[in-house]
Image (cartoon, rainbow, N blue to C red; front, side):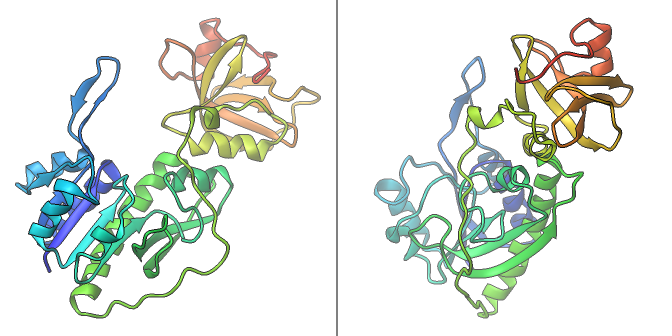
Length: 310
């Protein structure tokens, strides 16, 4: 099969690398245009572009792919199948109807749950215990197409965004290679998405803020969902601090207020969170690197009795 790959971030780049190293015939790679990043606004290639260049694959970065030069290039390539992984653009019928076998997307959730841009973070944030990879045939909706293949895994209480990302990235690569074997054999079987859909909108700055410490489960999941990047945050003594490494504590520390640092121990600081206590193993204050709460206490940056979120 002649395959065109579409993707942009690291998650997609690892899938492209897996395809090439498995001998899949990738005839072209489409990625978002390179954008300026960071304080210096330096322009960096997208991770997918970087992988494509390592393997000598032709790369195209049109502003528009559903019309104009982007669409014309796709027509020239005449792919049998288009594989999409976190491309960042919705495809229209002009592209969807182009390949003989169709366009298929690798999505990091069990569709129809968590359609959208941030399925990994939202699943953790909402306390899900299962997630997975869905490969579906793209239609003009947002992650609404018929399912071709699905793989499921457990979300462990110890998982954060970083660890679950790695698990789903690995599962996605395996699932994609399995799917392409099925496609090459002409055995694609599609089924409709079943159940009520839910959505995973792009993460906004306001999503990262914890202002309510009355529910231990809520606080735990919020920290896990944005650990290690970009970090859940809350106010402390008039400053915004980031919290990492959350876990439940089953110890009792007596009467305390929601969000209070009731104890600082070797393994972290214990927060009173209404329905229980949550241990935070790393804290990052403005202008500082993440540090243990004990080091923060030694540096007179935090102390027991302080209130977070107030």
